[in-house]
Structures are given as structure tokens and as C-alpha cells.
Image (cartoon, rainbow, N blue to C red; front, side, top):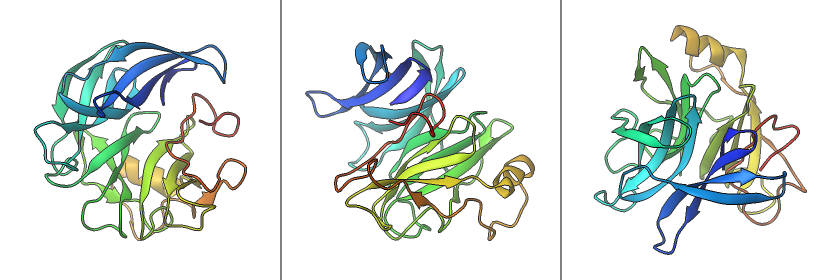
Length: 235
């Protein structure tokens, strides 16, 4: 789920063709939601894991023309109802052969987190971030060992107040499979985003903490999301 308002979200789901698609859902309560219209990206293939801020949206797309596993990140103009002007976010964000997907944006839309199996990580799939400066995305930065492990770290999400990074991991001490973790975004991260300078050997996040039971179980817990504060409501 990617919330566009407190009561409306974009849901990624698999249809009968086994491709990922997107549709709006309307929440009548915290537990009850009704599927609404399909949201089309205009790109044939699998589309999903969208993140939006204002009139900008970013989604992970596996175009039919790409080889299996070569997902890319696309930006769109978004009016709250429709996506238009699909544009591949070029290298160094979307790279040929690499899997680049599952975007998450900070509340101001200036930082893009995403999952990627590109070289230079700690192993498996890592979480990276890029900063938008003067309309262009910077060279991606690995989130570091406080976030990433030797196994897969995926599905990043930034809290509404911009203070916490949530994600799923199979490479840390878990209750089983993938568990959801949270880490505080440190002031040094904000300084780096604002200035573009700083010592990246310094941790940008606190050490990730497992939410524990009963949120996490022996099964897989993935794609954390919330329309408000993650301390009061979490999907």
C-alpha cells in the first residue's frame, strides 16, 4: 500500500496474468477497504510499489522488453487520479541488468530510497538512497551496515515525519523469514542531504531494531506502510 491520503491508497497486486498492477483502494475503517479504479502507468509489464509526493510519483517497473529481473525506476506526473509522462530515471539510478525497485520518498520528496541488487552492497539486495539536487538524482549511496545485511534487505518506507526508516530483512535476527525493522534517521543524514558534503563513513541511521512479536511472526512480513504515524497505525 502507498497512501495518497489518510483514507486512500494505491495497492500493488498480482492479476490473472501474474503481472503486478496497481489500483486505488478506499478505506472505510482501519480494517476495511474497497478496491476502486485501476491505475495505469502506460508501460506494458509489471508495475507497482509506487511512492508519491505531491504531483510526482516514482514506481518500480519491469517492462516487457526487459530481461527477467531487470526492473527499473520510472518517474511520473501524478494528479492524484492518473499517471502521465512516464520517464525512466536513468543511470546511476536505473542500471541495465540490475534489479532497482520498491521506491520510497521522504516527506519533502527530495530523497529516494530503493532496493537494489547492484554491485557494491553488503550482499543480496540492499537499500540505497539518492538525493534530488537541481532536478537530478545523485549517485546512489548505500544505507550502510546499520540497515543492510549479507542477505536481502528490501521494501523501504519513510515515516510521515521523516524521522524513521522502516524496511524488511531476512538477514538479521528474525522470528522467521522476513521481519519488519525500524531505524532512526540521524541528523547527520539531514546534513548530508542539505549540503551534499559529509563523511559517509559516519552512520546515517541508528542500528535497525526488530519490531518483534506480535507484529513479526515465523512468516514473512513485508512492505511496511502507514498513512500517519508509524507508532499508531502500521500496515
